[in-house]
Length: 222
Image (cartoon, one colour):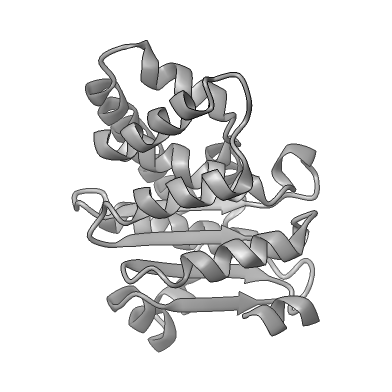
């Protein structure tokens, strides 16, 4: 089962790469993607799927709560104690969504915060991960990224406010967007990422699901 899921993810990656090549006709898009320095979330996804045991996460996928979330844009928070397998569970959700939505005009995007990787602990990595994935999904979203790159003249990194604004615009380009965020509790500047998530959750087309420990500050924000 894990092997089949992994092969499905590899197919999705190949498909997105093909789409990316199709709508990038010059170096502007490639330069903007390189400038963004988005985290390699696919590496986290592959690693988690390889650890997945048969049947893992099926209880969540088939639950009434998840099916309701899947059917209409809303927010869902999944909590668990340390070591409970939340990352494997979130990765099962990501893989399922990608396989379900591959042929649709909807977007599936995801992000991992990772205490083992300092480059995946800052709040802005969430926005960069979202924007880079959307840019590979459509030429319109890519234009949002290249426009941001041009406004910054490619000489400085985007501010948090600029990133949030462009991500919000890009997310609105799709009929529906499914956003999976793993390990919110492992973000180094939690208050900022919670601010981002609150802002994004207001989008009418967004299905947002997050995974974390049940920490008091996260619970208050959610």
